[in-house]
Length: 269
Image (cartoon, rainbow, N blue to C red; front, side, top):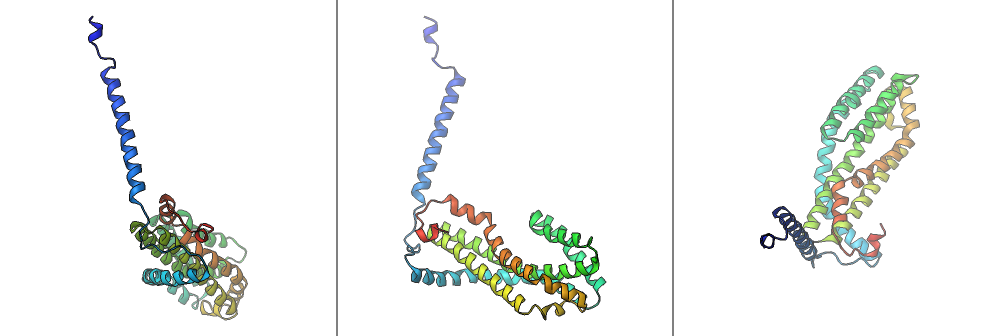
């Protein structure tokens, strides 16, 4: 009779069972509340069914995007130009002076900047190129020419970084307002805009490839080598203008984590 008075479960087993039931209940409530709370708002853009609808919404979204991207691009270009303009003037002093300033801007300052922004690899590959150029046969001319190309590429990358900041804000705001279709379309607009800007900048360099190197150096050898590197520089500008927009983890994670019925045109992208 003494055994019949004892509980079927020990206190520890009973506590573990209660904890498991509580976790299952909490998970169920969280999933149900998330699915019910994130419903596309009526103010979200309608499905895009044709080219006309695409360009109409593209124009509206471009205005909103550039309202944020304009100041961001202006700020990043001004900050980068502090060292870049110094490098431009040093090229008219001499090739050795240009090489020295290039090492300071791209290697020393670049190493510190990469640590500060926690972008080891995206910043340091500029530094690595300058370092490797120093071991070439004619190191002084090679460093000068490559630093000029990196200087121009850096200016164009500042445009893409400003666009990256703008699209992060746009996607976050639209998802917070329960506009999933608008959030994804804003990313499409940012990618297309950055790609077009890259094409325009690359075309300008290719058109003026015979004249623009003289703005950075008085040396004919440096100018000729920069002219030879211009096609590769133009290709890098197009790629690097799109890559920072696509590399934003916030953008892709936000779009991926929220369920929505995106229209076929955007899903194909």
